[in-house]
Length: 167
Ligand SMILES: CC(C)(COP(=O)(O)OP(=O)(O)OC[C@H]1O[C@@H](n2cnc3c(N)ncnc32)[C@H](O)[C@@H]1OP(=O)(O)O)[C@@H](O)C(=O)NCCC(=O)NCCS
Image 1 (cartoon, helix red, strand yellow):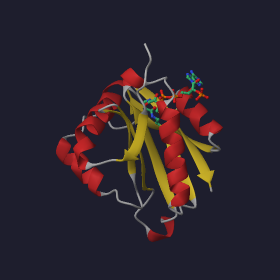
Image 2 (cartoon, protein in one colour; image 1 turned 135 degrees about the vertical axis):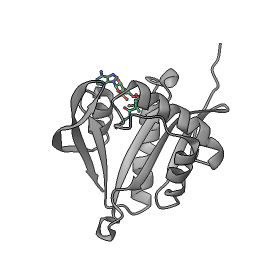
Image 3 (cartoon, helix red, strand yellow; image 1 turned 90 degrees about the vertical axis):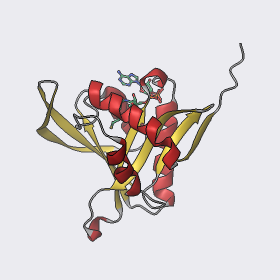
């Protein structure tokens, strides 16, 4: 059968927050991609959402009527001299992983960061996340260092690799 589903990448709306939260909470519960360990409530997520704006966007990828992933540029720090630096996050619903949607969303946010005038974007990627390493390496990020044993999840201490792109 012909599959005419198109991936639509757009700015997130508050109405997307349930889907965004459900994707994120699944990653919290089952992966080391995030060092959060407790599920986020909608209340907490609303606060997170409100810390994003035109300068710090959240994008979603939508397939038909379904949000299948999200990506964001957050403030790296609220100290003003860091204003030109953003931190990236990227999550795809498990059911839709491995189909190229992560790469598309990631490409979109990297382009958005440039358009918004960021000087540099940074991602913190836990050890073992080979898919994320691959995406960063192939999108012009440099692995600039490893923070050793800074996290502990599922009974294992974890290193975090810092990936940076300077525009
Ligand atoms: C990481 C994540 C966003 C990737 O999204 P995705 O839609 O599954 O990824 P895609 O299908 O677009 O791309 C996967 C790429 O990794 C490659 N890949 C798959 N398995 C791999 C492996 N074991 N080692 C290296 N590369 C691998 C694929 O070949 C593909 O590469 P290509 O685009 O050059 O062909 C998604 O898996 C996810 O949400 N994971 C949990 C959260 C997470 O890890 N977020 C990133 C935190 S920094």
